[in-house]
Structures are given as C-alpha cells and as structure tokens.
Image (cartoon, rainbow, N blue to C red; front, top):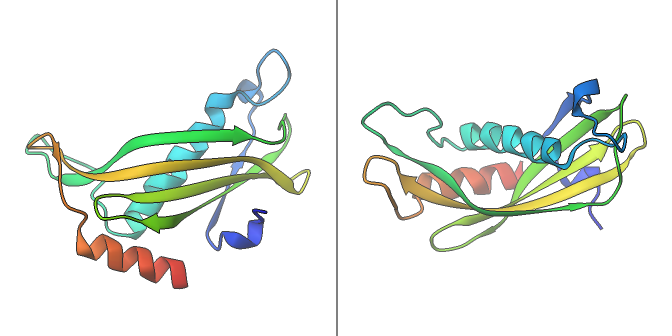
Length: 142
C-alpha cells in the first residue's frame, strides 16, 4: 500500500476550477501535468539537464507512463504530489509518482514512468550517466 510517508519530497498544487471536467472531477490529464512538473523538479535535483539550446545535450526523455486513478478529486482541494525512483536498470530508471488529496487525506492516483537518457543533439538514447545513478541513490536514502 502506498502512503504519503513513502515520499519524503512533496509538492502542493491547488485544484483550480478549470481543472474540473463536466463530471465535476479533476480531469485525468491534470494528474499527468502534476506528475510531469514534479518529475522535472526531480530531474533538476539529480542534475539532469532540463533546458537545451540548439546544440542539444544529454537529458531525460519519458519513454513510457501509466496512471491509475483511485479517488476522484474535485474543486476545492489541494494535490500533494511526491515522486521517487523505484528501480534503476542498465539503460533507464523507473519512477513512481503518487498524488494525494489533501482535503480527503487519501491517495487519488499513482503513476509509473520509464525515463531514458537521451542525447538531444544526436537524437538517440545514451548510456545512463553514473552521476544520475549516484544522485538517485542519494535522494533515495535522504
């Protein structure tokens, strides 16, 4: 069972009126936008380049993601979003993002993502940088 205690680094996002669809629930794409935002913050924490010029550079690319919705959030509420690496493989790492409803004190959605190091200049995947692996290990233990 996933709990908020599994995520030491949490970010709060207010639910905006415009986030709600005709069923009066937060639209499913909003959850993915929150996950994307905390994923980029996580990338910056482990030293992944998140801004590229015309020359490119090595950064991370989202190779795959899923999302399981477990509780419908609505307006007003606050999403508490945490992310972590749950597996490091030879050529990628797997992240997990959990979105909690602050107003209802419960899990609202959970997402997994496969992240691949990518050379944006050469337009191809590259080896997983050792410094990323070291920083992932540091964040996992802190």
